[in-house]
Image 1 (cartoon, rainbow, N blue to C red):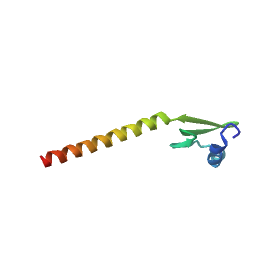
Image 2: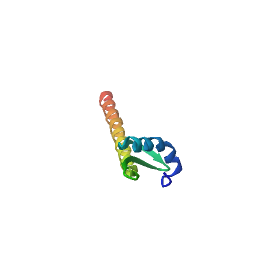
Image 3: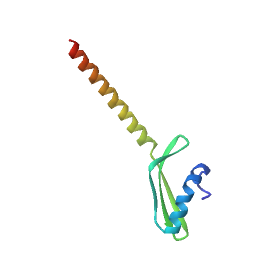
Image 4: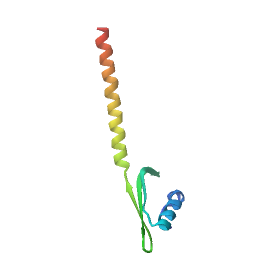
Length: 88
């Protein structure tokens, strides 16, 4: 556990210990914030411990947020156009 940042280790430790005890992988697909970055986590029990993989999904989440904002602006523009057509 010493390789994990302390803030992340505190929240993950119970899940990692359970994965080791049960022999089953731990998968955290819901992104977890660490500093200014977002990660998904996968941990696989191994013969002599556990292997933990963090995937940085920050760029993906930022892209998804940008698309949501763009779509919302488009919806607002379409509403304004419809109002303009109604008022003549």
